[in-house]
View: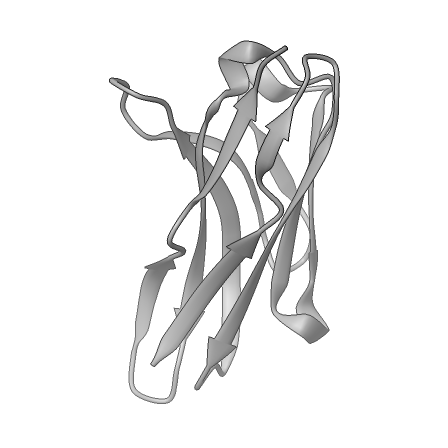
Length: 119
């Protein structure tokens, strides 16, 4: 079984910063792509950023220049550094990972962490 556990969410003022972490654990042989999605109330879940095992990154236009995704393959952990936060960044943030175990390959999701940007 594979688990993804997120941390680092919270309440921050506009213009502030937060760093999210997501650690994968379990019977993992290899993790391919990892990423972050978010879902605001009444809206669909949307991609924020993703990163390959080799470190290539992809960002949604609405976070380019403000957010940075990174990963530590030795720790099976992905990070999201969020700077210059705006109220419209308020959402539940979910991490995801494409994981290969001994028996199969599947996409896994974390439980989500709330980010609230408000004065």
